[in-house]
Length: 428
Ligand SMILES: *Cc1c(COP(=O)(O)O)cnc(C)c1O
Image (cartoon, rainbow, N blue to C red; front, side, top):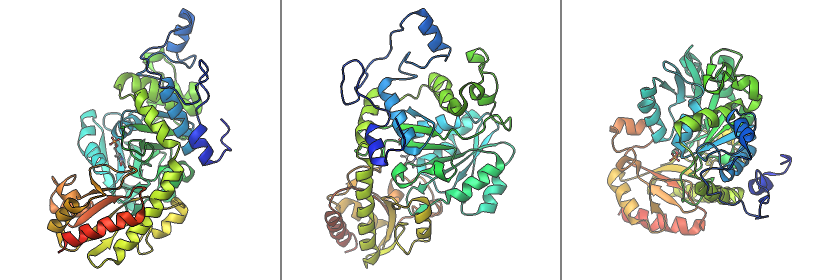
């Protein structure tokens, strides 16, 4: 599909065409594990990666393929691999790059689950992570060593209020010859297109805004197709002969699609963290209205954050869309359509008042999720961050008096009224 179409057109059409067998206008859910080979030669060509097609749904599935092409197109990438969750996408993104003894340099401002995955679980593969403040460019450059194989950050960082200077980070990554991986979950490609700022790879938890209705978990890894995997000798999985495919060299053979092919042919084949066609269907449905929803998410977030900032019961609000935010001046360059819809605020009355607040809301749902059409609320210190010391909670922007909101697409006035009555009860 021509990529000169606008975003609103591509979010509905990219990757899809009427079903060749039936003319079905909507993308069918190809609920089939396996696909019949035309003959033995066709099967051999598919298994040798000489022809692209469908073998078995752990690797590729026609419904999932449409979603992959759609997300790649919206991000301006060469290709994408979908998988079973956002956390699976993080592992799948690092897998072609890493090896025992190698490290990823990651921002301190990340989704809590990502900090956990990078601090502890990846060590079982012999990988490690070094966390640094990505606003400290000297510290970031100094943290990169000969074993660093990726730099990882979020565009608009969870739990909100922080926008990464992707241009500055990409420059440091390029100078070091290391790919920059950007988690674009909170922003979506409608608010931010990390590849245009120099990102090599973009990952998503499609569970959130891309699906947008809180129905399925999913993930995606998008490759820009711009990184030279053979230049430094640091990425042998992509540049050297692959024993599992008769010595095929992915970069030499597939060029800008090398990383995507590797993610499917080795990553999904052997790690098995595959997206199922039902999940791809729900996410395709969601993406059709992405720009409309994000526009409303942002407009509502600005209204709610502005109201909260003026509220005498509230101590502070972190939303980058407020002029008071230290990151307000990055919006125009990094995410010109707005700072997303996820932010935190501190209430007078501390921990007890926060617990009362989440117990008193009626319209907001008290859940550990974000990016739903409905507005969501959580008190991190009593839930997602309760295992941490108070000092560690403060560092993560999740201290005892902090509430996180994911603003939905309801009427903003109703959201404000709900917070108003709940705040009155919480601080009475
Ligand atoms: C939710 C989330 C993840 C993890 O995604 P899952 O689909 O829950 O596995 C990763 N990064 C960010 C920014 C998220 O919000």
